[in-house]
Length: 359
Ligand SMILES: Nc1ncnc2c1ncn2[C@@H]1O[C@H](COP(=O)(O)OP(=O)(O)OP(=O)(O)O)[C@@H](O)[C@H]1O
Ligand SMILES: [Mg+2]
Image (cartoon, rainbow, N blue to C red):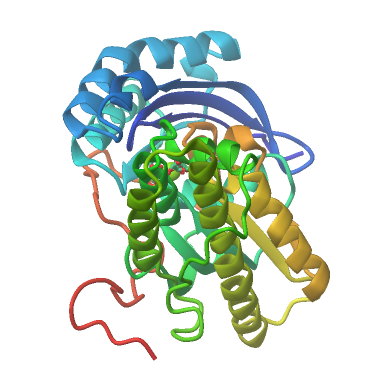
């Protein structure tokens, strides 16, 4: 019987200080021995968004306690783990540095291998914590900083099919919530208040819907929400109608673009069963799940989401990516440094800024 690997994971790329201990199990998934997430919502609430210096200070104050708590809860001591994984990027440099340094120190002190994990690989592999999934699959990554369609061929092997050319989807939710004064963090507030509104009340733009393959754009939609929000004078009912119409427009965009991404995936990869994995913070959104479930029925593919606990930032997904890399002998030296920008597909064209041409 092959040894089941146990890892300590650490995550501090943005506004969650997190540590987890997980162990492989015989089902090919993970036993979550501990998964501690300390969210900084109250720190950033009054600013309506993440303030990097405040986030870094909170990580510094909390990280020792969170790691200690994760180890205690797991009932595992450092001598029993097989390695340490910490997020090395992408994210806020001042925040990443804290988790990465703690992770490297623990690995050095306990003489264990170290893996510097790409946070996006953490999201990409996260459904595997609970569901055995084999490669390849199509990934829709929808988070606070990224919105991408990628073919996941193997651990460390990604091909980008499309990406946002401006805002990330989570960012669009957060900005909509801010414009409508619905609360922080934005995504869950927009989802909650959308239930009280008429989703067909406002006709909002669906930018680049009929061009640029499965690339996406949300900036024009955000501007339209801003314009309409100024006309409605804080009228509660109209605010809910606008939130619902925004979410409905997002769903129409995702339906169309996911269809295109799936056709591209099927042309490039020969598989018996097509699988779509939806990961990242926005994957917690129930209406988006219902929408993509409808598409899966129409196009006959399997769609898999992580449990909501593993959609937003957490360290279990970082430990899991660490285990997957460890098993392929992909460890890092302790001189590895933070990478604030770190695309999963390093060969993909940079799709932002002036001069961008969309086919
Ligand atoms: N129910 C929801 N509906 C829509 N958006 C949501 C929901 N829950 C969370 N989000 C959004 O998810 C985002 C956070 O996701 P995540 O933690 O994965 O992002 P991040 O780590 O900041 O960015 P990245 O992973 O790209 O570096 C936020 O923008 C948040 O508003
Ligand atoms: Mg994230």
